[in-house]
Length: 114
Image (cartoon, rainbow, N blue to C red; front, side):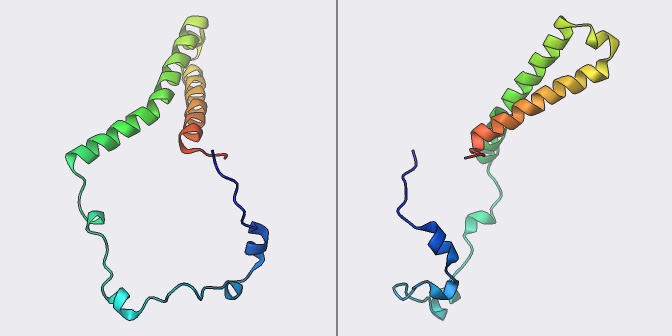
């Protein structure tokens, strides 16, 4: 549950950058930027475990769409003769159902629409 903020966002958006008081923030000197470096993990290749975890995560993200596609194919095959008369149309219908299901699933996963 998100907490309600007390910030007046409309007045903050109306302010220009020069109007914002930043006197309490210390400036970073040249010494800071002279010693700044990129974190080493950004240059390292992925380990086998990281690749496996990424593959597993992607598999479970696409699994509901695969189930929806399989279910749509099965329902079209059992419920009608569409597979016999027009297999391309049947495949397009099943793919559309699976795509719609995948979009809904990704919206749930990533919280789009909040």
